[in-house]
Amino acid sequence: MRVGIILLCLAYVISQFFRNFLAVLSEQLYFDIGATSDDLAFAMGFWFLTFSLMQIPVGTALDKVGPKLTGSSIFLIGGAGGSIVFAMATTPLHLIISMGLIGVGCSPVLMGSYYIFARMYDPKIFASLAAIMIGVGSFGNLAGAAPLAFAADLYGWRSSMFALSLLSALISVGLFLYVKNPEMSENVNNGSFLDLLKINNLWFIFPLVLIHYAPVAGIRGLWIGPYINDTFGGDSNLAFSTTAMSLSMIAGTFAYGPMDQIFGTRKWIIFIGSSICLVAIAGLALIEQITFGLSVSLFCLLGFFGMSYPLMIAHGRSFSPEHLTGRCVTLLNMFAIGGAGLFQFLSGRIFRFTLETQGSSHAAYTAIFLFYASSLFIGLVIYLKAKDRLD
Image (cartoon, rainbow, N blue to C red; front, side, top):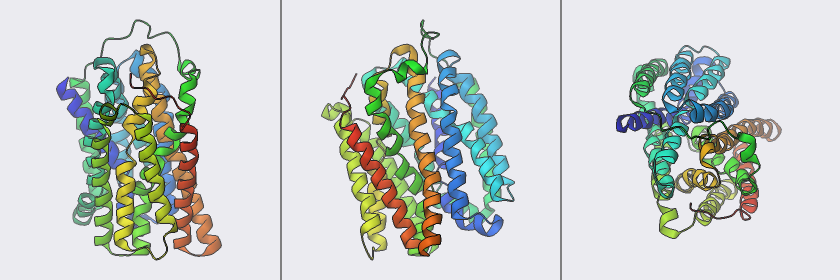
């Protein structure tokens, strides 16, 4: 099982790579196949949408079939197959289709790991294990920054995607061979997602789950690339800023992991961290004549404190009965990833509308940042009513 967990980590590294790599390839994709920032925002949003919609069948499959077959088969078809489609793309539509397939492929990877952690380990260390998984997987963010830029320049973005397809296929075979299913719950056939929706405490958590990951995912996954290019220019500036934000996200994930056990709370750690994210986004939107150094610092601040996802999942999962574990973590993940996808779609439309009406890319980026900040503020206000819980 140790080998299986390592392979799930590797699969999640690739999953993280896929949700962040378009920012680095934005310029090449524009010149090669005419993909604009709006096209890439839609493609990235489609990744999040298909990923999110898959959480319902994935959650049921985890509870009733187990992570072994669920993870290996879907990652092979979607992850490896979608990468091939991306590598062969000749129009923006092909990119959108491929990103949708890749979203399907990545959908069971993290949740399969969380299902194993929830069913086989002490609930008190769930957040720490979840954070370690995300922290290791977040090296995919790093791979999608300077290393990808280097590989794309050296070998071309198509060859790089073909290589990722082969790697995804090999990992899928490994998942089938080495991942073992936890013992099934006796009540696995009882209950459904509807039973989870009847848990009142979850409804004060859902709104923040929906928005808390969207700013860091949307900005690192796409907007940081065009923003740096349009505001400061230079390939070195882009590589530095994306790598710095990726490193901050990795550090933040590991930092969040043990905090609930150290401070004896999940709610207030999440609330304070998300509030700091709100300040960082507002700074990007409102500071006039912002310098490159300050903008990167704010991106890093957002990256570090925006990685409260493991604690959010742990907080929500603590209200779930055991036999609905798989469905609970995937439902929460559906809100988180679905929110990121929804906000990615909307951010692209906001960018295009503002650019057309005001003719200024600076005004367009400001509108996007204000949109993220106001949505996060609403989620935080509702979250104040959530019940704190560590079990």
